[in-house]
Length: 627
Image (cartoon, rainbow, N blue to C red):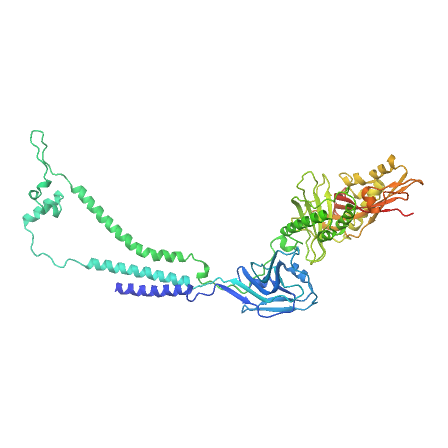
């Protein structure tokens, strides 16, 4: 009966194992999910959101085919949406059947600029005729696809996801098959053991031993002799007999006692034989049992799992970054912006190429370069303006915003530690423009920059008429200009901290009075005037509730003769711009002044004052005074 049960268990195990292996071979699902777009559009841009790409798990493989160049960029949702704006485009969708389709978003169909090269993109991919790349597009990010400029976007788009081929019956079937296999082996071994025990000798001797034979067997047993040893008489084994020793020193003959050694050796042999048999039998059963246990540790794709709940609570923000508006750009993006700015400005300064300057400089920085290039083109005595610092970024403060314009402030060192650090203020006016440096000033020595948020959190901007600062932001620039002109006589002198203000020490009222008292200029009238420029100040808040305010204004120095016949000499750069080296009517020189202020909050302690953090000055224009 046990043989029959073992055979039945073996058949069941083979069936179960075959079905389990079939789950991973014959009936295995495909390794990937492929969706193909098969419709066209007139839109120049196709946008793919992270939600669409995450309909299935795993890293996606995107293949785009078309005629001519193909560009695909990846950015945050609000960045891509900002670049596309209201222009006509198409949204790529995927339905429940994994079919791709396009949803047209109407708008102006004017020719769009190139996607590639914008500072906002996290990744860029390009190809000609066909473009294939792997991407793991998370939720919150989008991808934009563009073909040749001014033509419809390519719509031969194929998206492939790796498919986690779940076979929930594989684990149970293989485990059950191995269990039945172990059961079959166990039943077979038990049946075999029973068969061997029941098998005995087939015939018996009917002659009974005599009394003398029984006594002889008892004596042999007490002497430790086995049946083979007893059956061989000493006379028949002369070669085993010891050689006789004659003489008085010969030892007495005695028979060795081998009962203990031979008995223990026999017992050990029988024990080892039984242990070997047990190990062999246990090994047959242990293999399927251990295999079954090992299968219980396989991945969840091999076992049935409960269906996910349809109703799940929406995730709530758990960090400060998730509750605030996103930063204008990330640290990695800023590194690329800074590197490209360094390269562009260095090349422009070397070639005196103002067209290249416009790519990365704007506002006061661009105006100062224009003047410097004009002077250097006519005089070798004029030094170029300082370039973009080539050292490490020591402070980065991007604005918290999803709209434009966007502001980013940074403190960057020079590789030459003898040079003071520079403060850079970038601005992106439009999503289709690059970030450009508006202000660059030298960090004042001994002045501590107020504590600001980390680059991942960023800082908010404030309107110029905000009541949250100690003084109105729109009045600070010209108030400081008045202090430089009038010194302590200015009504705004109490607004600004004089201690540590190196710029006031170099170009303030005291310095101007020294120039007026210079004996070499005793026949010259010196006057200074301050005028606002066209650039709006840029401001980001600090941790204490104050703000870093970057601003600029123009200061004009007018030198006129006091008497007839006296001529005023122009400096080298001013002489080139004015077209004269000396004038009997006078020379006007206009300087651009850039400043970075640390403005205290409205509730600052008594005695808190505005501090000059950074400054810069450069010649902007010069002309002869009209008669």
